Image (cartoon, rainbow, N blue to C red):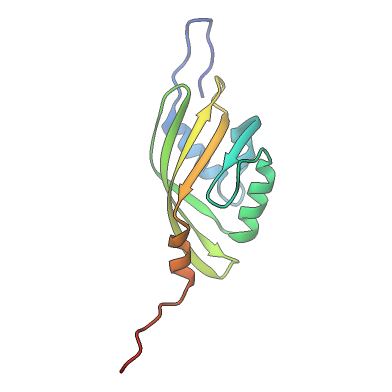
Length: 138
């Protein structure tokens, strides 16, 4: 995380290390809310912007009790970054789901997220939970 040394010097943000810590925080024993500054906003295709990060974590755990994410690529600067990920878990603990997405974050001078935006296609989930319809024979 960046650390202000004086008015003109900032230690660069180490996005690779940040991504590794985030993968662990998104696991079953992780502490996802610790990545957020007070008052930070979270949004995704399911949730409008909210500051209730604990509720987001609880909803994810309830929907996917074994949710985990693999961060495949990350890039950023001192004010924010983006990362591509593959999320895996069992919906309701029974249906295996794999989601591909991208997240864009803004961070403060301490490296804490002030705004988080997830982007993924909900149809990817639908395709995995909806049985394939076979064409009827004439």
